[in-house]
Length: 163
Image (tube, rainbow, N blue to C red):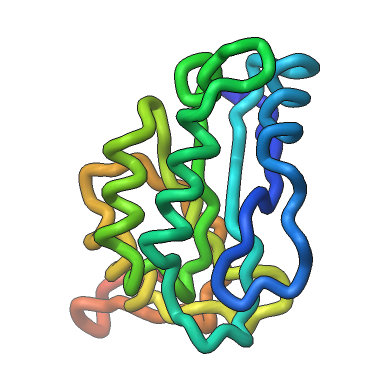
């Protein structure tokens, strides 16, 4: 995305949300007013303490509403923003794939940013491969910490690669 500034906020409550999200309309309006060329990175506040292990259809529907509801000036965020990326937790991404894919189809110029979260032990490389495979054909960004490096070698004389 050409090195543009990304503005990120939890604008809706997600699985196991412990804090109130910021007002999504105000976030979008301020971003459009102050830094309209920025990439909007919007997320659901979530925690690993959730009994619900997915972004629900209702949560996704609310995000579609945030992106498609006209702001105070009448502009629809999804139409005036340079780009919107939806930051989603790697913990919930696979279980939410159908609804997240629907979100990406509804919002033009959108992508996913899949993160592992601050303070986590990380995720296994096999989980990363599953995420990439599940969301193949979509624009995705990965902001993940690997739980451990894995080695891949074809034979003893081959150079190993860390992934």
